[in-house]
Image (cartoon, helix red, strand yellow):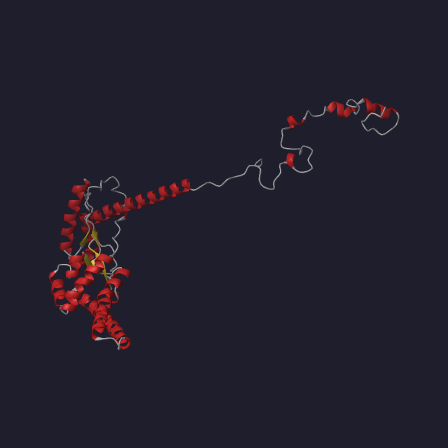
Length: 334
């Protein structure tokens, strides 16, 4: 079984890498690692020429572990399973469930790689990869990982031919919920490749698929309708329902977002805004004496008295007017 299946019985579209591509990726990685190891060893040999043999041997072991063991672990952890060789070959290390690897996965792979790749010159890795159904070496088995192909050739799937116009919408009442996905896939493959089949094979396959579909939907093939046209019409009806369902879900989501967004605030003509004075509160207006109601600022003058001109005069104002003096409203001193 070459497919990658998760714990929820979901088949992932990942293809395990085979031995030739993995061997090429490992060869590229080893070439880079050995080059770095030699350069670092030469540099340290020149720098530690005055040290004794024990110190030189300890430094050599430390460089070996740091470069040839720690290097692949660090690279796979930081790049999430893409070393230089795997990147060149279009490969990647993933977990068994298809997720990206972490440090513990890279640590197990790197530790086992010292034994099965460096210790045995790759013999154990090649044998285990050939025996495994998914091409895994011992490091992948113990680490729970898998090397998969990232660059897969994509072939364009031909479109399903449309049904005859006089059959469009004829199966709107058919119950399509009982049709399994395997039968839909078989019908789609038949409709996209029926032009490549022999006439007798094409007719027999159409009859078999149409009878299975009619038994599940409860809608028999109409009299005089070819089986292939019936299959195309039912598939078209399913595509129409799926498109209608997706459009309805998008409309509901759009309405939900519109209701959740705050509505703009509209100011009425009487709403107070900064820098805006209502007519009765503008500077210089007769009623701009404050914000108190009109009745709270005293009674308004009687229009009749204002028209008479003298009905509201005081005795002092009468005396001033009788003697021809300007009216001040104050009584003269005694």
